[in-house]
Length: 227
Image (tube, rainbow, N blue to C red; front, side, top):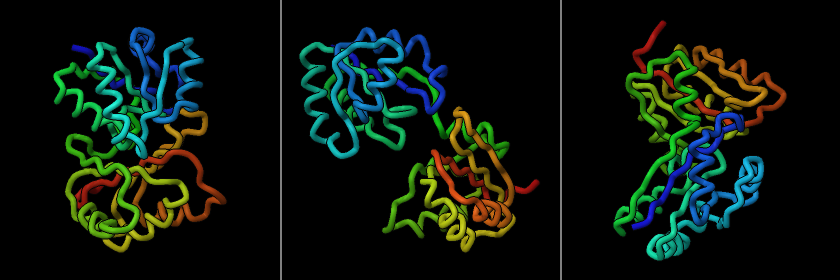
């Protein structure tokens, strides 16, 4: 049978791309990309010249069938996301599930991941943590916030930069102002920031910024954590 490779890509710094990842992408028959334009820049940088096709959140149900047909025809396929590990808060899991169901091999090429990078840098407890990814935009959002506020383990959330201050204000309504958090912005990039503190002071500090840009990971300590 064929092999589906889930290949982690850099979350910012291209030097984090592993030699094994380059070798695998050079060896497969085709590459499924979250965004062919974004991936094209990465592939060109590493002189990887392979046929590619789009595989993203809005077409993955349709493209899974195409991907399985390729695997069934004896081709080895790699999936890459714009940044990080495919299948973690972006397309990929449906393809991996379908590949397993059709008797193919699924292999992960590990590499950069924003969630674990942020929690390692946060200095907050990481022996147990809950990964939430992006919270739902509307329905169920408040319920999830309340659950996180009541949780005794560290929680990892992805937050859009233009929604960060609004999220901190909203979440502050469900927890004590002394709750410890860490905001990790632009990890591995030139303007990387890892800033930690209690949610009340952090909300006020980030409100004073003229603008907030870049990829953000928010780490929230469990409710009984103190320093």
